[in-house]
Length: 200
Image (cartoon, rainbow, N blue to C red; front, top):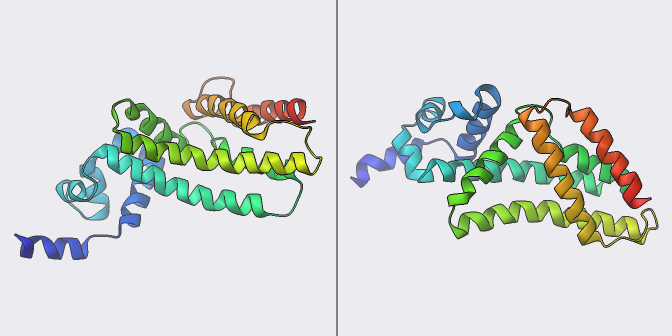
């Protein structure tokens, strides 16, 4: 048995290639077309072989989200480390946060993973909390920096970050599902106005 399975494992595409292929399928065909069988055909593996690595579609989706978040986290880190005012970097953070538009693949995946989390185990929930925590910590640090420099009025960075992210999540869901009257540019204007009122 081990002799049969070793060559397949050896020739299997790297995990990151599988996750990238899953994300590409979501972007091109929508989440409903992402099945283990379809993904297997895309990467040259059987659905059973994919299940050997990921155990379930829920786990595949969560790992794909973590992979996508890793890429976004690296981009967020570059934006936040860039030169410029705290407000300029805050606007860049918001721009990265808000979906590109209806059916944005990252947000489509995020919504599906959170929807499935109602039945997730504690370990999966903790991994989702870690994703949210990274965005929150970076925002808190940026707000604290703006306050310390006198760019923002004195606010509690943690409380302000929690409220701002709730606003961003609500608006972003509207953009991602294509709710009429909530296109990306309109949402960004709303958020900028909120920031002007909250931080000036």
